Figure 1 (cartoon, rainbow, N blue to C red):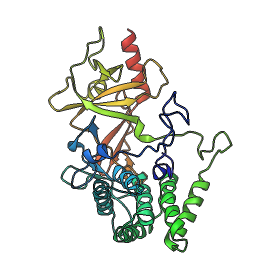
Figure 2: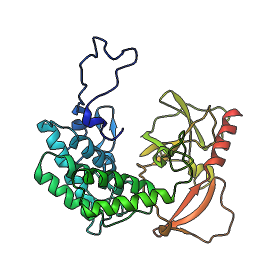
Figure 3: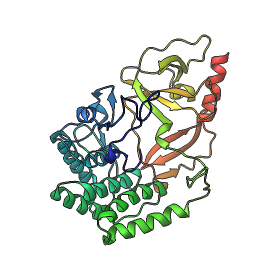
Figure 4: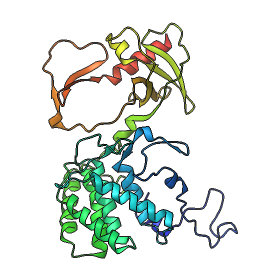
Length: 347
């Protein structure tokens, strides 16, 4: 999505049609908000859906509500439905802000906080959304409320350049209509410095400030319900079989069984996490990990990640053992596991 694209409501013609054709001449394609409305309740925008049905059990996140606020605020002639959506998204985003300017991201289906406040991407997207709402919304009270929230969040500076880049979008929107807004001007200046400080490579062919374009959430492609897998002949016990997913037959493995922690798995409340493989094997771009209950992403900072100091050899498949907020956790050796899975399938 590019800035301003939704505001102009002009979309490219489908493949095979040319500008000036009878089917496209003089037409402006307007966005439809039906699906967005279907995924929104009185509290906010659900994080996940199964086709057109929301999945409330996965809760809400500020990342998505902020995006929804940007989209709905850019609608120049909002219907009552769109007006209701943007009001709910604004209320939800503001509810995640702390007085010191840090921001929560995740809420469960009952609206209870599920994380600690921080300065990750969601903080930057919050500033982006609040800047848009304060600049372009056609309701004075909403503009004023969004501006107050923007000023609260703008107290902080994220250590992450991508978060600062999102925040810069909001500051730029606000300065476009209020050039004297000092909070936005200072934030934009600091964001430009933060991004420039981490810029390692740019060229006409590669304008991104890093040598690789990456998005960490793609590590976990999807979480799906457990289904009985297709058995793999002569496979070790930890390789539970293959599952069909989006046209792929994914190898499903049990991490506790692989490491020797348990001899058998429970499938009563099991889910499957689809992981993006890292080894570059074109025949196995994804792996499936059996999970107990529904796994959730959590924010890890350098201060919250503490080595255990255990110098003993780790079990096979474990890269390291750490403490996360006093809880013992293990970091899987995904590269090694990929190799073990590939060998087991080929055997």
